Every structure is written in structure tokens, then in C-alpha cells.
Length: 61
Image 1 (cartoon, helix red, strand yellow):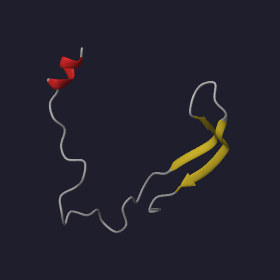
Image 2 (tube, one colour):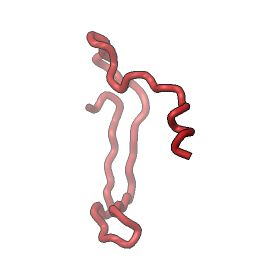
Image 3 (cartoon, one colour):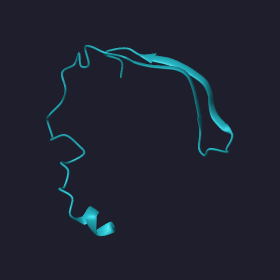
């Protein structure tokens, strides 16, 4: 089963090329909203984040 992964096509580099930067106003559209998010490290573990709420607006970094 592990051999399957050795035959996968290699992905491109994780980092962008030097000198290649997104525009200053990027991203100009879309947003990410988290509402009432609860997180824990394991199914039977304690809650690490409890009722997390936030919005990431376009252009926020």
C-alpha cells in the first residue's frame, strides 16, 4: 500500500517563486466565517476552543 504513494506525481513547490507576490488588495472578494465552532484534539478529549465565532473579511491578513 505504501508503494502506491511512491508512484504519485510530485506536487509543485509549496512556496511561490522569489519576487512573485499577490496584488496589495488581494483578496478583494469572499470571506471566511466561523460560527459556534468547537474543537478538541481527540473525540473523547476536552474542548480546546469553545463556541468560537469570527469573520475574516476580504483584504484582511
